Length: 251
Image 1 (cartoon, rainbow, N blue to C red):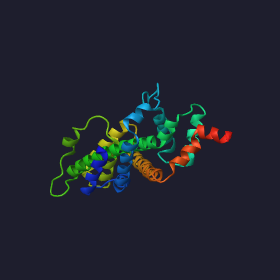
Image 2: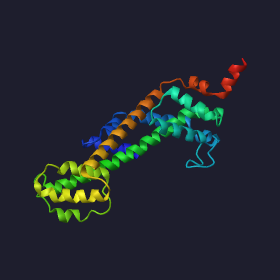
Image 3: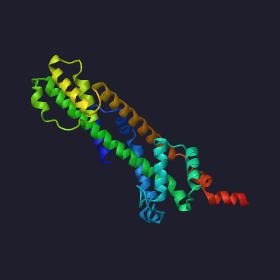
Image 4: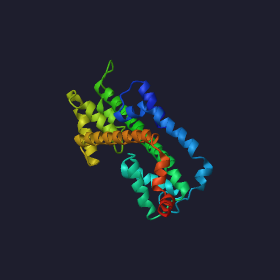
């Protein structure tokens, strides 16, 4: 929620944001609706009654949460009812789920999607901050506006450790094809990126790929949230319930 709130602030300030951030801002109401449904449909008492995982990275979490997490990871957050049915049926061939767990599939998927969105939102905000830092540095080096250009040596001596991908990519894009006086900075960048096992072109390509992948995932999440609010979960429950399947065979 904090990450989404910061994105809204960025939007109001008319700063340049990525397509993924645009998706989040334009569909903020969809996310809020999912959060409201989670609070209503997953009360603490129901959560406590769900069987928990005894080991693994999700130890202590509801078993159905592990199933939902695996489904979301497997599909890159793209919800498809038929695919979900096949996924749950395959899971139950190894470990049958209780009726309560089956009813919890829908709300647990919402929890995982919201958590995935929160993680991506925080990443977007962090990368946006890194780009803003790169822009501020470029402005000082280039003497943007009424300010005079500052000496590169005095500025760059404060940078230690690995350069964040978003920061380095933005700085490369700002300084390329600029005044020759920034050539020492580009050489410094090349040296730092070589230590990190990449190049100026490589870091820009890497950041563009990252933005593209995040945009696809966020679009999948929002689309999935809309679809999940429109389907008949009772019908889906009946199609994956082992009890219902047994009753149909005996009737």
